[in-house]
Structures are given as C-alpha cells and as structure tokens.
Image 1 (cartoon, rainbow, N blue to C red):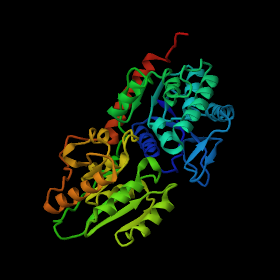
Image 2: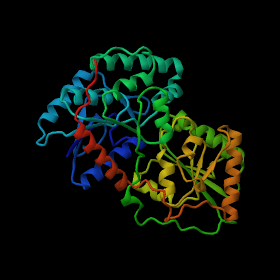
Image 3: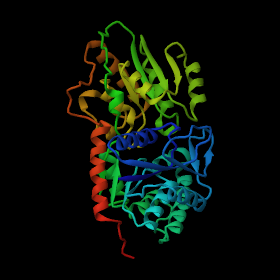
Image 4: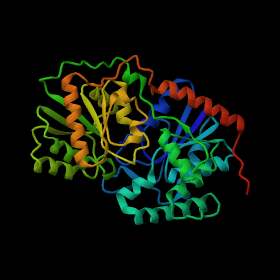
Amino acid sequence: MHVLFFSDHHPDSLGGVQTSLMLQKKYLERAGHTVTVVVARRYRRNKTEGFIEVPSLPLPPTGAYSIQPSLHLAFRKAQKALSELAQPVDVVHIQADMWQAILGAAWAIQHDLPLVQTIHTNIQVGFEHNVGKVGARSIGQIMNRWASSFLNQDLPKDANSIWAFQEQIARHANFVASPSGHFNRDLIKNHVTKDAFVFPNGVDDDVIDGLTHEWTEASTRTVKLIWAGRMSSEKRIVEFLGAFAQAGLENVTLDIYGAGQLEARVRLMIRQLGLHKTVQMRGRLPHKQLVATFATADLVAQSSVGFETQGMTVYESISVGTPVFVVDPKIAGELPAENVWLTPKPDVDSMARTLKKAVADIRAGNAKRAHANSEWSVLQSKLTARMIDLYEQAILQGPKRLNK
C-alpha cells in the first residue's frame, strides 16, 4: 500500500516526533509498503528521499519549529508533487499537530481517502508553558479559524481552545491514535475524540540489537547520569539542574544532550552553581549514537511534568537496560515500575531528594536495571505490524462520512 504522512516537523530537526516519523517510514518500507511524507520545508537541511517539502517559515529563536504562511500555497505545492507520483495513495496518516494536520485532513477529504491520525503532542500545555495561557488562547483562536475555514466547517463553540482545534481534525479520522494511555484519556476528557488507540513511539530494533550494558559494581566508582531533550521550559531542564546542584552528589557526573532556547541559560547556571567539573553540555547526537550513549549510563533523567505524551528518552533507556528518573507520575505509569525512580512531587526539593536516593540505591546494588527477558517492549517492528492492521481496517471502511 501507499501511505501518505503529513508532518509539521522536518526529520532534520530535533525531537521525538521526528524520530518516530522516520522509524515508522523505515519499517513500513521494510515491510514492502511505500511512504511519502508532506512536510514543512527545513532550511539548512539535506534532501530526504520520499519527502515533499511545502513552503514554510522557521520560527525563532532556534528555527526548530515552522509556520505555514499560506495553507493554500502549501496545499497547491503538495497537490502538484503528489499528482506526479506513479503510485496512488491508499491511506492518509496525519502525524502533525498544527498546520500540516489541517492540510492532511483537507487532502484526505478532497481525494476521498481513509484517514488515520496520530496526535503526538499536548500542544495546549506546550503553548501555555511557552507563551502563557493568554497567548495559548490567541493561538487557539487562530488555529480554529484556519481549520474551520480551510475544511469548510463551523467554528467550534470554544474557539479559543487548542483542544477544540484538535477535534476539528480528529472528527475526519477513521482512527485516532496517541503515544500513551494517559494522553488518550486527556484526548477523551477534552472531547477531541470519543475513542483512541495507544500506539507508542517505537524504538528502532536495529539500534537496540547488539547493545549491551556493561554493569559494574558502583560503590566507589563515578556514577553517570544523563539528561537528554530539547532545552525548553516545558522540559524543565533548569529545575532539574537546580535539583542536581542541591542534591550535592559526590563522585557523580551529569551529561546533558540536546539544544534549544534555554541552552545559554543552562550554560550560565552551570558556571554560577559551580558545576563545571561535574556537568558537561554534550550538544546534539545522531539518534543511534544517543541511544547507545544511554546504555553507558547508570540513570537517564526526564524532568518534565504534565507535558510529555510519551517521552521517548525513558523508553529508549529502559530498552537498552538503563533505569530512569521520572517526575511525571503519568509517564511512570506507562513504564515498568521496577526500572523507575519517581519523585513524589515535581519541585526542586523533591527531585533533589529522589536523586540522592537513586544514587544511593545504585551504589548499594539496587540499580533497577532493565533485563532483556522483560515482557515490556516498544520495538518498532511490532508496532508497525499493528499499524499496518489499522491501515487495512481504515481502507476497508473507506473515507469517514460526516453527518452535516
């Protein structure tokens, strides 16, 4: 079959959605299917096979996100490129949260095709973190107006709600999926959909294959911690770094991987807190190399709360045998409890105390290591097989018809 993805994020930019997109493409193609991706244009990027780039403008300060200045221009560009493909599309899969979600729904409607939607991100919370609640309401109003106009449907009653915008797209999907059970419940609670499937973002079988964690007794050696992710406010790297400093851990190092708008502030904090000998900024790594690095650590930390719909770093860590430090109880609830240190509260004091406990446990031999014989798995090969079944069901159903 020929699957058409729509994505806001170019694969050259950093993030879990981008990683998931490329993994899904890889394993669908390995199973003999064709995947084409309509994606916002990325500047200073490499051309990628199977991608149709539509006009966009990078958003400051990092350019990791983009905006579509004209949905109509983007639609025409995608339409022209797709009309030149030899193989017709069988099913559309929206892997976007914003502008490309609108385009994907419009393309499926116009071409009378079944539609699957994965809602990857809690953009309501994400925008509230970055632009405040007033700013988020303004963005919600813009997105709702664009969606209702482009899809030729009535404006929602709560036209300032980003959840309402997501419902405008989801109503056209045969199936709605999200990366976790707790985010599914959020989508249902906020009336985005009445039902959703859990499809976690997967871990590449090829990356995991052959990776082993060489554990050594830790009573006297240096304990290695890793934090990895986008350096933005919702990821709470500033709070985590404050907790690491407050914990006063001896013979413990912290490596920070990633980039983002808070990078300069984090570098300044490291100097101000006197952590330059124990905390190192490692920048960005290719995904395969980053996962291999997780396998060298004693603990991988995730400090966000109320934002992550899944949080791939902790899934990848447990997949290579490394236990994790988690602040969000909803994320912890999706993971094997025996591999997790969960903070009782999200504040700096609680994180500091939990870090102390984790390091003490590791030194005492209670390292919470993940074992290869665990039944818990998010290997992409297994997830792709499930998604192919869902595509086949959608194709049998045909395009969703709305009662107007």
